[in-house]
Length: 302
Image (cartoon, rainbow, N blue to C red; front, side, top):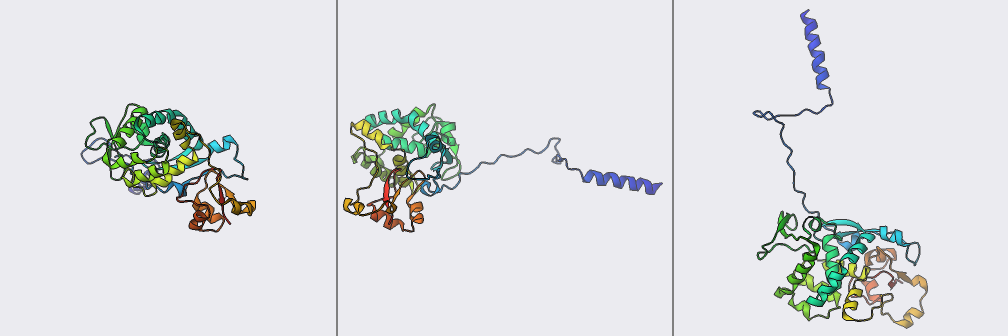
């Protein structure tokens, strides 16, 4: 009889141990389960936009249809890293371009620079800081800030960033931020439509720690032709870039296979790999001084 009881208990124990249901654990002196502790997600390392741009491939030299083009994606990396579609960027431009133009008139900052930085820093309005704090330019609190703020992991953990009630305030504060600091004063000696020098000057003055910041910013400006906004404010005629200023005699003696027309997603790096040419040779052949290229631009590759 005793052997049967022992055997029965063993069967019950084995069945209980084999169950797949989770078991709630309690601390020794508590009647409630231990709580799960939420962890702060740190900012991801941000790769260069030039090397991470993704786009819909073209089957020829003509542009793909509008729907496909607007659905192509790219990764914007600055204060945060997000993936956005071309349509999202175009919608962002349409929403904030007038504010950027107005600020150019009032403060002298190229609208292309303001809007380009807004796209890059906020991920076209989809990044955490822009959603939670309406902060489209990644501006930190600094000692003089007395308004609302939000903590976010950036260069270090839980840094203080400014918080605004609406994006328009962020745009205005961006202009005031640049005009009120001596380290940016040299920028205002530049031509108002010299966006390339402005982009480099921002990096040199310490606006961003990313060494590729000027390349990313210029790439966005030229990809979406934001320099057109500068021309509108200045009352100048704007011509979309197509060909580089390369020797016409040289071009006349070359065939179409010696050229590559830039499409969405192209970078000097990807083009150099495709045609087995170094980036330096590619820049030299086309009189390019930096890494910025524009859609529709024809590059000599042979």
